[in-house]
Amino acid sequence: MAKNINTIGVLTSGGDAPGMNAAIRAVVRQALYKGKKVKGIKRGYAGLLDEEIIDMDAKSVSDTISRGGTILQTARCLEFVTPEGQQKGAEICKKHGIDAIVVIGGDGSFKGAQKLAALGINTIGLPGTIDLDIACTEYTIGFDTACNTAMEAIDKVRDTSTSHERCSIVEVMGRGAGYIALWCGLANGAEEVLLPEKYDYDEQRLIEQITDARARGKQHYIIINAEGVGHSQSMAKRIEEATGIETRATILGHMQRGGSPTCKDRVYATTMGAMAVDLLCEGKSNRLVAYKDGKFVDYDIDEALAMTKTIPEYMYEISKSLV
Ligand code: ADP
Ligand code: F6P
Image 1 (cartoon, rainbow, N blue to C red):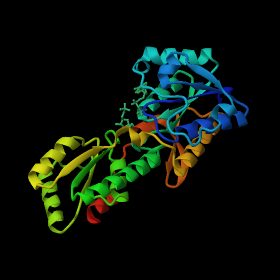
Image 2: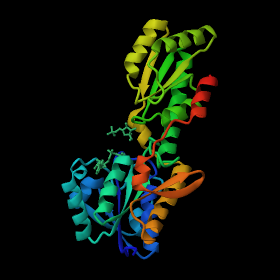
Image 3: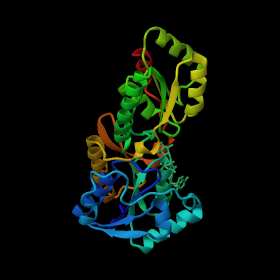
Image 4: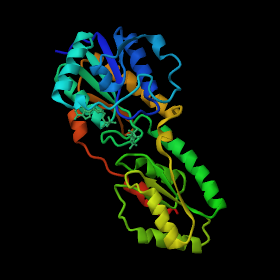
């Protein structure tokens, strides 16, 4: 029989992402609309174990939809990876009357949600990461904003690169995944994208391409390098030495995680946040909200974590053919 949910907790975990506030707001407002109480858990699982738990009402999320970061703050918590930490977390939930939790984060955070579900706390995960590296979904909260932020920065690098007739390596985030790099490669019309999933470490080929491009009259050469490939500074040095073309490396870093979310991130995060509450009210647990084939859907967390994801081949192909 479906468990009756009275109080829903919400937390953000792992790296923050623009749109997390829109998701929190939707969880809070939809839960209140359905007659539930809401508790905010601060600093992810670390805050749960420290009992940093606050009551939330409709006003607690006023004026937050347009704000980057997460009003609940976030953290990484090693203690929660242990069975003792998870048991303690479940007991704290029970102590505070929390029957269910919405976890906004990435795969690591969902493993935590999976453990809580097994300990009797109903859980729903929302994909919150700029990296787009969650296999079951074609959308993650924050990816669109991060790509737009990186795209605008790369446009600026391109201006100065052209003026100085330089080669520029721009390193974007993504942890082990190359989605931000691929999207920026296409959005910025970069000459080269280096993705951890695809990179062959053939620097000689890259050097020949840069030299050929210069011979054909290209005034700049923009390489978008995913952080999973890394080594942008040393790569720039080697390229400059081999080609004689001035080469600079720019690492965009954490600016990609901040800023006001785009319309898409606000709307999708809002829809997912409301859906998480609806699923809990239907008695569902251990599920992830995802976006697949044009629809918002939900998956069992165990099944979702077993899925794999690959770089879309055609997008990668055209990042090479359109230069
Ligand atoms: P993300 O959620 O973005 O993948 P992390 O991998 O850093 O980020 O995970 C966030 C947090 O989720 C970790 O700090 C930890 O508290 C929790 N977590 C990660 N892996 C596990 C696990 N195997 N079991 C329980 N909790 C986990
Ligand atoms: O997962 C989001 C992300 O920004 C990755 O792109 C990056 O590798 C990592 O987090 C950086 O983590 P931190 O904020 O701990 O430096």
